Image 1 (cartoon, helix red, strand yellow):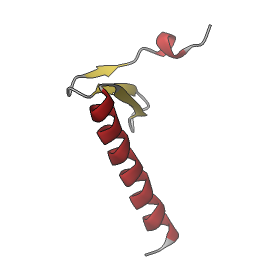
Image 2 (cartoon, helix red, strand yellow):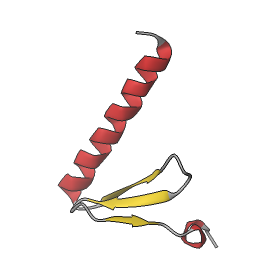
Image 3 (cartoon, one colour):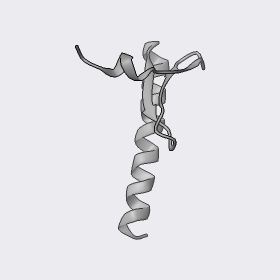
Image 4 (cartoon, rainbow, N blue to C red):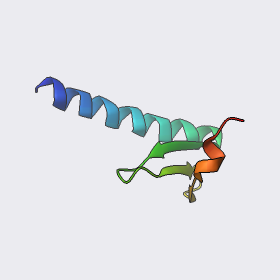
Amino acid sequence: MNRTQDLSKLIKLTGDRAKLDAKANGTYIVYKTNEGQFIREHSNGEIERIKEEDLQNE
């Protein structure tokens, strides 16, 4: 494998691990879609979009 494929695999495995940890702890993960939208995915399967104003630290 080349470096790009290795990195892609590592990123996928990290995301899978984050989902497992969230499920075990009853929390959620946050990620950014290809369209630039931030998503909060809860351990129960509920998915919600995060509004841009909720991302601001004021």
